[in-house]
Length: 108
Image 1: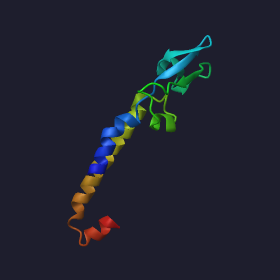
Image 2: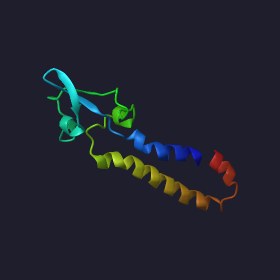
Image 3: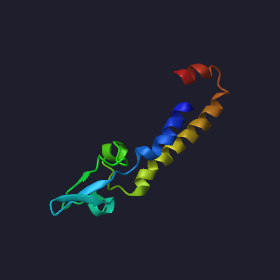
């Protein structure tokens, strides 16, 4: 249970969108994700970079899975599917107590 607790508490950090810097007239200034995205894709006309000096920019799933312009409902599915899997596993394991040698099944 402790290992799943670590994942639950860090789920927000794993799906947090970073601070961005946009190139305007040769200078990088702070901008938002909506300034960079167009129709749930990165706008090719906008030159931007992630502000790694900001304490809110993290190397997380948003960067790894290229979800910067993904709708928030798609990002929210990470948590939803984790908790759904957690609940289904709990239901499955509650029925496993009636099966002989369940310990071998669960370990294997």
